[in-house]
Image (cartoon, rainbow, N blue to C red; front, side):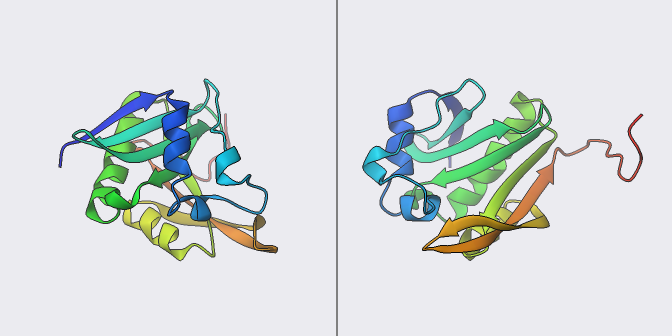
Length: 164
């Protein structure tokens, strides 16, 4: 494996990957447009991290900040990347984040009806830290989302102390 990570603003490529027929049904909710009308977020605050294995595009990670140090990741990997390459891509993507962004905490939100995505996040080192009830609508039903996260290795965490 020769994984490479690079920022991209090739929104047409991002749109093409996100609307892949095997991916889009798992990325959408009841309020998403049909795939042919989907448009990626176009903002300087949104980072699209392209993942490649040599010349083969495996997908991307969409990253956006909640705060300077807290970022959310959306994983969009093509079927050819599923399995071991996806796990390696997730580890490499997290390392890219630690090396290139001021992020100290990386989080994701996974609908409880998507057990495969939850297992993938956990296998990538994320740990469940909460549940956000009534936060994902699909098929006319409203599901909770599991919140998972991982902290930058080596940070000194202060937990339970009041802020100065």
